[in-house]
Length: 332
Image (cartoon, rainbow, N blue to C red; front, side, top):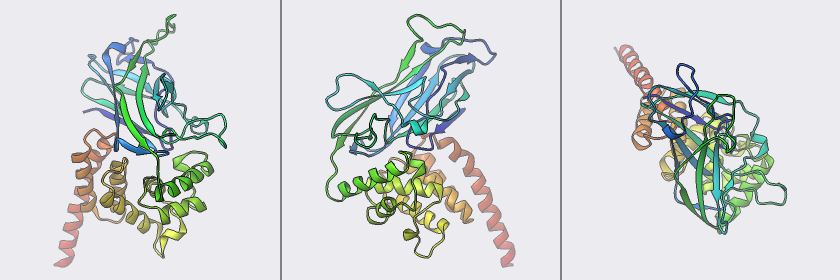
């Protein structure tokens, strides 16, 4: 199966700058009728204000022959837009990612009938007119939110219809957002402060920031603490206060194991599992890494990370077999 996946590295999504669709031989074709767009929420349908929403998009086609589509570096850029309708809103509005996350390069990728292109976006904040005073969160208020994806298809012939290019709209995804209380409310305040100092980029959380350190140390089991710990562990950059005499790698592995074992409903659990498998490989725990990858494939077959997990698993199994043979030779 030819499954391509992309994930943004920050707090936005993945979209495309040009909706050009080509046949494998190079001829242009408007394929809006042959492309399906499916939107899925990775996580619990019950969320909290300020919680990042993780959306997975699948692009599929029934067309004969491969198509070439241009994928964006981040959601919120044409031609794959995310639209949201929040509490008290009668109309759909287009999600606008923070401007600090927009300087990336589009990617062209093949799309065939026997596979899918799977994209992931982590929508935490959006662009606002007044960052200091306005609520920057995508899930800014309690209530019901609806999301959908809109993929615009360009024929690639150099012209543009007066009515604009046709678009394919996905199914709708709905989540219910509640107001945080007690420890969750305290964690939300730290979460907002940490994101503000990271220019609203999840991938740029500063491990030396006081708000980040307090969130990780005092509120690790809140949804905000889990997202912060996952983001920091992915980068291998953890606050000194959490190390407790351990190396960054040992602390990173411990955090990933905790999220893996104790946060089964975490929206990014498949990413935690892939990162944990990588950590086990670094620690030469190949059998454990292969086992985690097997669980990822069994529990999340439609994850944008499934292709990478499937590619890594046999290599980990081979490394484990080689290590067992080497240990047996030394034991003789």
